[in-house]
Amino acid sequence: MNQRRLFIVAIVFSATQPVYGQDADTSVQRIDRRIDMLDRIEDPEPAMVVGLDGGAPPKPKEFEISLTLPFTFNSNVENAGTGRKQAFHALPSMQIDWRKSSGVVRPFARLYADADFYTRHSENDGSTTLARVGVKIVEPKLGNTAPYLHYTPALVYDKFFGERLVTLHNFTAGVTTKFDLKSAALTIDVHAVRREATLKTIEQNRFGTTLKLSGDINERLSWAIDQTVQARFYTGGASDGRDDVNFVTNAGLSWAIADNGGFDFGISFERNDSSRVGKSYSTWDIGPTVGFGWKF
Image (tube, rainbow, N blue to C red; front, side):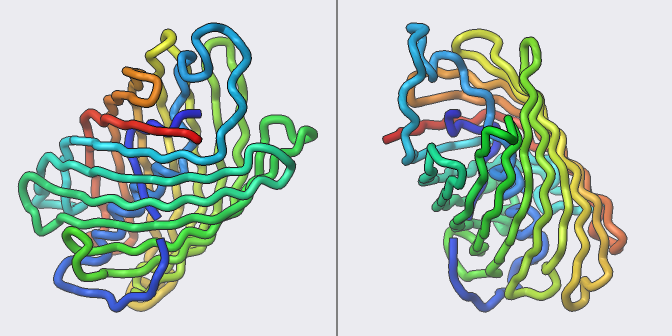
């Protein structure tokens, strides 16, 4: 599939001293949302990408570079329960992917960086670098079901790669299965994550599932709807004993404007219910994304 997405995300290594000029917990919640988006099943690929001439699909290419520029409206910049601040924001990103396209055990790797710029409340500007290494199992006996494992270290920065707020280490195990319907595809993902961090209060265990329905409208236009639910159990510092349930719903259209480019328009709604006072919130993120990708 192509790498154009309704909302884009990030991942890379290192050690850090957290900075408290900005709420690191809120910053990580925003980064979490972007990482979770990246974890989700890719958007449906319009037929044009696999060949408009009706011929056999080209041999899969193992490397891809993606550039994306979303410009969206966010209804709750600080993930606040009350006194919400609203703003438009741009989230340019660059991503490099490698994946083995044959064999039963297929390793993959990713490098990613982004920066988040708000038109108002610029104290919430931030940036991220991430990396990912992992494997998935593609076994004919399993059909369209694929177990996977990956390790994702992430660095969260204040402003444009300013002071480092926190370093995350996410260890993920999951399984994805796909069902081909008459005019769409249903994908189900179930996963478990252990997070270690340089800021103990955001360490957690999480368990979640994603349901995604997607399909093509025509050769250039495709659609996708997904729903993710996660239970998050905090285990470190003052957050020990905090339990959250997080819901994210996405819907959007993708238009292939060129062989290597696309335009998306998406709507995303997130609701977080927490046992900790002040950590429950709702937010909408709505707007377009322009993206380009090159495979080789």
